[in-house]
Structure formats: C-alpha cells, structure tokens
Length: 82
Ligand SMILES: [Zn+2]
Image 1: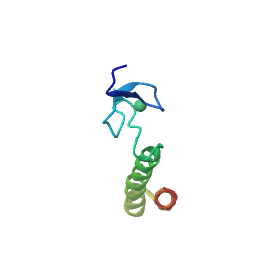
Image 2: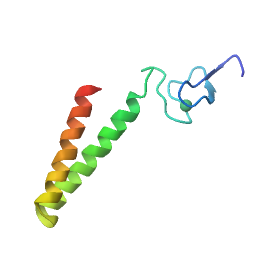
Image 3: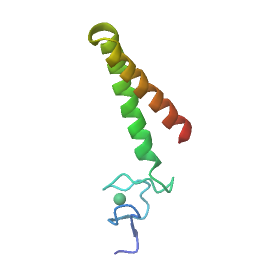
Image 4: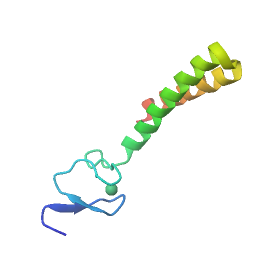
C-alpha cells in the first residue's frame, strides 16, 4: 500500500486516501457507514413504487397499486431512518 492510499473497511480494497467514496463498493468514508446503500435502496423503492402504483391504478388493478403504495411507504420510512 502507498502512503496516499487507505483500505476500504467494507470491501478491503485499496483506494486513494483523498477518496470520499470507495471506487469498488461505493462505501462512503465521510458517513463512516453504508447509509448510501440504504438511500439508494430507498430511491429504488420510490421509483418502483410510483411506477407500480400508477400502473396498478390505470391498468393492472388494486393489488399492484397497493404494492406500489407499500413500496412508497417503505421509501418514506427509509428516508426517516437515514
Ligand atoms: Zn470498498
């Protein structure tokens, strides 16, 4: 390891010491945790939830729509928790 490098605590790969995000696993050194991953998961829930809710409302029926609404609520909870 070079002096200007550090080891990622999540994936153990060597990255530049000035890096704020691991280039291998997107570990966020500033946050000191994998909150970024939860946030990304929340964004996916939000997008899929909106699409499912709209598709269920217009095309596929209430079951799909409520699944979308559920994902939307999950996104909301993730945003509150992180
Ligand atoms: Zn990493």
